[in-house]
Image (cartoon, rainbow over all chains, first blue to last red; front, side):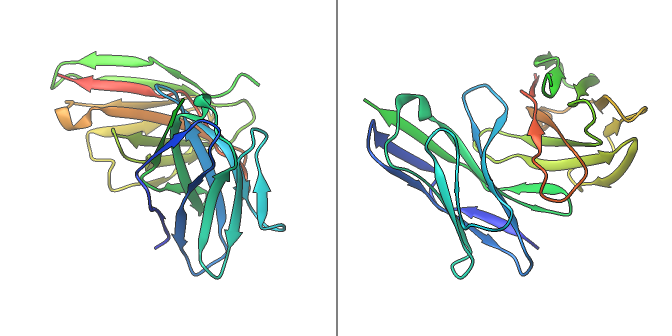
Length: 111
Length: 114
């Protein structure tokens, strides 16, 4: 079975500092990988996705993630965070048309 | 494109009552999904439809749960004889058919069973 593991449940970070959220997946087949963000009391919004091609994918708000097949990882990074980045972040993999999510990483940005 | 719409957004019900949630997907999206999310956890798959056909149901979907998508557009998720363990956020999502297409989520419906 395919699964996703998010290695950090909570990540506190100061404003303008970099952040990395770790995600590992287990799969023996080609994967499509996603990062979703969930702000308090809201649904999930897509941040970025990897389907094929370039292993480095970027979002419009400064996040990037790199697909690493040898390490089966899809870590999410941002070089400088804002207070507004405080949210829960979910890594997910798709198989047979449905998403399987990790447990999530709560990012709390402090001034 | 008005996004995935869910209602009600919040529902408080007494144990043993029935509740129904509605989801209106993005128009033209033929796939529709239901997920459940509890505090501190990632969303868990419940079921999905392609058009009006329910193609897969998770073992999480007990006999008290039923989902329909009668005309291949909106969907309902009904929970009968609610239990306190049903308290969660129920998320609906939709996508176009094709592997790798983005799955778009609604704002969710919070259920509290007291």
